[in-house]
Image 1 (spheres, rainbow, N blue to C red):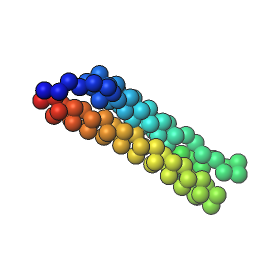
Image 2 (image 1 turned 180 degrees about the vertical axis):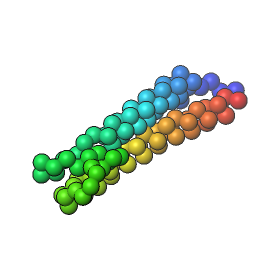
Image 3 (image 1 turned 90 degrees about the horizontal axis):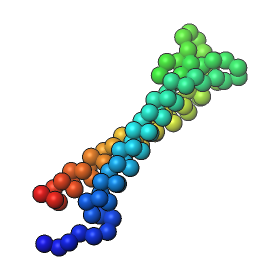
Image 4 (image 1 turned 60 degrees about the horizontal axis):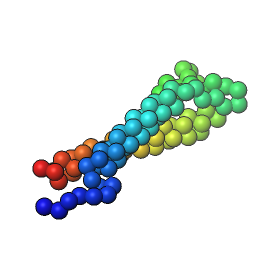
Length: 98
């Protein structure tokens, strides 16, 4: 059986997995934080991505909320992909060592 060396060794894969998990958790928390952050346009409080202001809001809020929603969605997707990559690395590592 060949000896494993370098970054793809057991310790290297564990480090990569921990980095991916940490990045995923940080991105998910950052996305949630940005989603609850209040957005304003022209001095009017538009609410947040997850809870827009009640009632009729100015049209300027539509663009700001849309942009904030897109940013939050992209950050949450990046966090989810990072966690999925960590899971994939773990599964592949476990199958290779078995």
